[in-house]
Length: 487
Image (cartoon, rainbow, N blue to C red):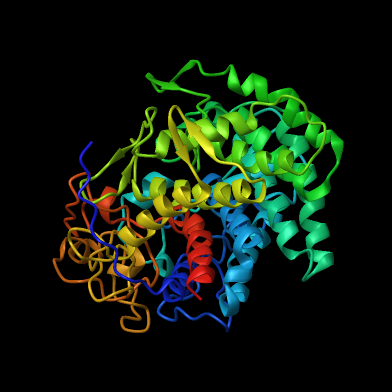
């Protein structure tokens, strides 16, 4: 593997942090508050759920479309909460904005879990939505609500919502005890539902959730992940025992699963993202173990170490790839999500290692906490412009950044500029246009370049040019970490 790493220029991590959080305001669905800073966005989807008598207004659009997919939305919320829990002190004046971003999601998840025995997992018909290029403010496609239930379970999305609520409960505990208690109570309820009625939402809602956010790695990892967050939030042994009793099942579930005729390997210690929580579980729980006496032999720390060894270019067990300019690559979808989520785990685990005076051994290679931080810094600096093209992959950061991102609201004239409705196919000319997007989605990090470090800046190439909430959410924490170090 030959890497031509570009020498790092100095970056304003504080500016990038502010913008990475501001991005979430551009993804808001529902009635926007008077404090809205991204003012070209207006109210949208104000009747979500009303056709069935449930208020499902609010939450976030996941990416460049206008559907609310609760599985990746919940993961993004968990990562925003974890970012604040670990690195909130490095956010200074942006901390309140980060809390607002979390609460925008948790308020919505309280609505989506308000009917016992049901968890709403999606709002909007993805096929109808993706067939149109229109602003969220103009949507006239079906806003169909989809739910899981006792008869038609969805343990992965329910348990991820439980994780998000539990992690967020910890964030709000010092600020708003009543709200925190409400989140935690709901997290327990939703987790119990996910555990008692086990099954994947692929089976009942496959035609609507696949291939967009199909669960390829099984729901067992989300159950363990949810229990780990509930233990961290409550310190109750029932959740710790659940984690211990089910981790071995998770470890042994490295079996081939067939979904829509395609085979996938589940149960990998090296995976982390909206679908697979394995590496996140090991890193999160390793901190709990390091601070607990008499935990006996558990696989968490050894698996977390093994995971780190898959990322280090000099490790004999490295399993990721790097572009010549140094960007981390893994298979599957929008690549920048891997660079941000794995960088988050690198800086978090580096902190845990430092606290316990440990290093990671990868064969004959020894990795110190500083080595993990250096690898994560290389990823962040690449995103911000230290790369062969000399461009930032965050909209609005630096002198050169993506101009034609795959994002409906950003690419169409704002309601303020063009008050008349632009219907389903009315946006096609804007989609096909070579002009820059008229509205800057400040802070949005796109899918990124290819493995040869080239980037087309084309709206049509959604793999490269589409931003997502789950690219940005972990990056918030990483930027807060480097911001605190630089200041």
